[in-house]
Image 1: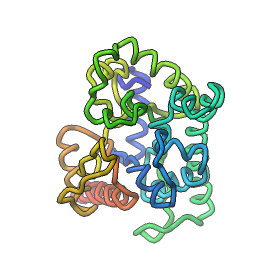
Image 2 (image 1 turned 90 degrees about the horizontal axis):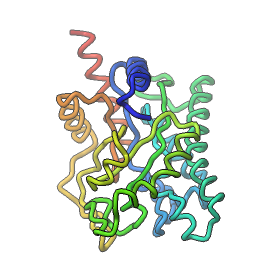
Image 3 (image 1 turned 90 degrees about the vertical axis):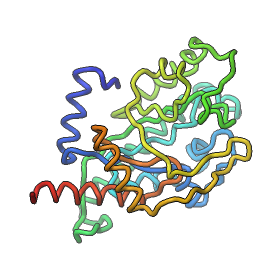
Length: 275
C-alpha cells in the first residue's frame, strides 16, 4: 500500500483519528519468540516459527496487542520464497507460509477483539479492558535479511546485485503478501539505496533498543541502554517533533517497551485535552 496515494492517505488519516491522533506499533518479534522458548539459530530466523511454532507467533502478537499496539507486524520479515526453497520446501509451500504469516496475525486480532468483547482480556492501568483499533502490517525484510549475513544493517550486497536483481527478488513475495488480507505492507530494515528504489515508500519505520548487531558473531552488543519509560519518552518526543504519528520499536524491544510508549502517548493526549 502506497502512502502517496489519496486513498491510502485517507485510510491512514481515518485510522489515526480512531487511535486519537497517534498509533502504537509493536516491538521486537524474534526477541519475544526466543523468550517464549523458540530456537531461532536458523537462516529463516523468526520465519522458522511459521513452520515449527505458529502458536508462539500468535502468542507474541497477542502480547503486543495486550500492551496497546495498534499495528502488529507479521512474522514474514525473513520469510522469502527463495529462503524456504533453500530449506527444502516447494514453491507452493513457500507461498502458503507467506500467507500463513498474515493469517496468524489476523487470527490474533480476532482473538483480541473477542476477548475484549467478552470482558475477559487482561486489565490495563484504568482497571477495565481496553479495545483499540488494530491493523495488520505484512513485513517485507530486505535482501540482506534473506542473505542472513548481517548485510541487512550495512546494505553491502556486493556489485553483482543490481536493481533488476532486487526487483525480481521482492516482486512475487510482495504480491502474495499484498493479496493476503493484510492492511499494510511494512518494508523493514532497508539500508541499501538501490533497494529503497524498489520498495518505494516505506510505511513502518521504528528503532531498535539502541544496541548494535554484530553480523559476524550474530550477537547483539549491549549499549548503555535506557529503561522502557525513558526510551518511550525519547522516541515520542523526537518523532513527534519530526511530524510522525506512528510509534513503536524494533529489535530487542519488548511488550513492556510498547506498553510504555502506549502509556506515554495516552498521558500526552490527556495533558493536551486538559489544557
